[in-house]
Image 1: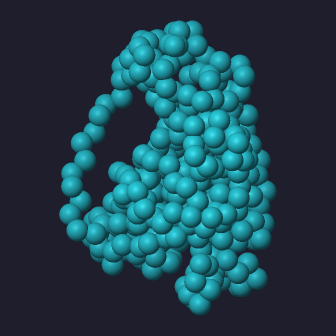
Image 2: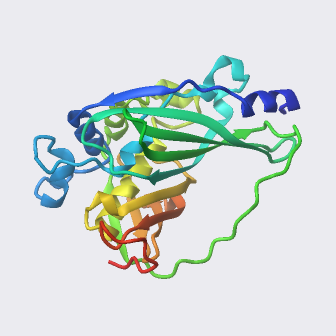
Amino acid sequence: MSMTAEQARRLRNWQVPATSHEYSRRDAALYALSVGFGDDPLDRRELKFVDHAREDFCVTPSMALILGYPGFWLGHQETGLDLGRILHVEQSIEILEPLAPAGRVIGHTRVTDLFDLGRGKGALLQSRRDISDADGRPVAVVRQSHMLAGYGGFGGEPPVKSTVEAPGQPACSVETRTLPQQALLYRLNGDLNPIHADPDRAERAGFARPILHGMCSLAMACRAVLRCLCAYEPQRLRSFSARMTALVFPGETLLHDIYPDGRFTTTVMERSKFALDRGSAIVLDSISQAPSRDLSV
């Protein structure tokens, strides 16, 4: 299987309709619960994320992942892509303004790059979603990378490979026990892919049982960074990114190793597999200060 130059041109110029998204304080609280906040009901630091009746209620920054989302447009029949060959491999969030406890946002999504990895290998598609509030003020930028397995061969340059230095000793480590029903809970945010809920559909896709959403694993890592590096002050988290390298089954335990410079990894403890690697966060020293190189706890 390969992609023609014309198919590549069509993908690069694909028009994704703007998406208006209205959310409530209840929606924000449900999102926080679906990614692990409140697993210790006595942890007073997390109540402001899950108790939407509080005056100091605030939104966890990772909620930007689901705001203004246009749906799985790569699965549109006219793209000509096989759904089983599309893999979500990288994700990042840049927070420009703290998310309001409730409101309406608009997401504008576009393709930014399409790289040829070689005939028989695949292609890497990168997209960007700009999220603004109802008044048009930019709120966040969400970037994604999808591997299109087997769709190489259309010509063009491959992406530049980056080297990653060993991060040293973590500043802190956080264990997160996912719930057996975690994927069913996270689905309430709008991602209805049946491989996260239906055992038969998951099996047909090659999985032993339904798998957890990669965006849920990423948001759980974001929660760990908020705890370790931000003292649960969401305004201090300015950006967050990671590469998704292995699936997670609901009920498994995630170990988030977070380093002083903002890098992190997430490991599935039962299988010693990296679920997330090349994680990186930019954190402010305080709400009013500029980013610092020293992000130790």
